[in-house]
Image (cartoon, rainbow, N blue to C red; front, side, top):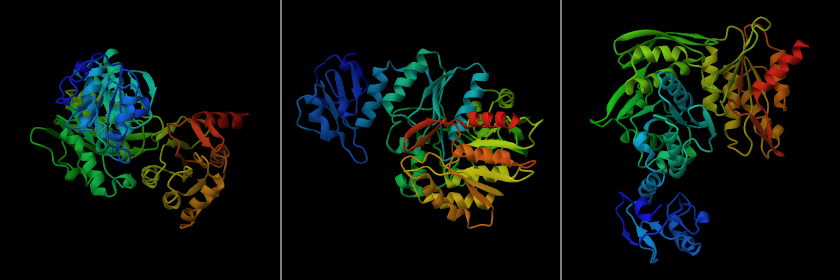
Length: 482
């Protein structure tokens, strides 16, 4: 592709020649003949410092925000904005064929995006998905490295989605992506805010800064879907030219409501109130948060014109989300207890899943959890405290110990567990810990396996090994049946 075609729609000065371009990069290590280098200033590294090096590696031109005194330089007002347009041009303007739906918030993004995809596809709309667990083009699964990829990878995915006939793309939009301008230049037909709780403060510093990063999404959309049961959701101010749809369980003034909510170990049921009509809905994921996720998906679907009766039908036929309050299919004819697999790996996540299961557990609430190695050690006793405060029995075990000693991590969790009188055991091997939970289950127990969720691996000091808790449970039940 010619440089002049890649630079269409961008105001610039400097180099006015033309050349054939094979690729674009903002990583100077990838600069080479035919590859344009765009200077991006990051948190710790400024790409402008590597512009001359990129030219020395054969890059035909560098795109920068200031005069670097180089012969082959193009100067633009914002390299972030320029890179977005350049990538869109390079990949053939795929956004002209796609409608973007963005979902942001601390919790619920993954579930809400997947449920929204299920709802829209049940109506005949082929969808792409970009998120934490995976990226998807229809039914094709593509591994995900980040919640929200960089702008080059985004446009690459958009191109593949447009080529395969996708109409909508549902995206998790992280606060990091918004703050670091990874989604600059994108426009969304709808954007949803789920909630805000304390998280990522190592990056944002304060809750206000974290909130302001999230709110940037609502200056990039035609319609805002806001959870007004959340205190931060009520602080969002929408421009007059942006349509507003609100949702909630507690607030009767919301445009989309869940009433007569019923909780059970195998799901949540409620009356969906939307556009003046009421529909009875049951989704196969337990917990109050599941109702909120269903409402956010309903809001996204309604915002793009799906009729409310179709939304209700689609929610009733949704399949839940892998690793998010996922109900494992225990044979109820043999075992009178429930097993839940959940990705909860933070204090807030543990609190959320256990609070939800507390409402439905007829017997004991048992939780199995660990903490990741080479990660924030301060949360370890906090997670232990939350587990022992909310559960009736705690099993402390390993969860991706990485280079750290698993027993050392467990010993940092236990002081939090011991802040309450809740009985507990520690079992280093996670498979043994799961077997212990199953073998010692009592009638009507709810057993929460926290931390792995959708992951199918353990990361040990010796490397990554395959470890899928669904397979582990199946093996254990087979062994017990012998």
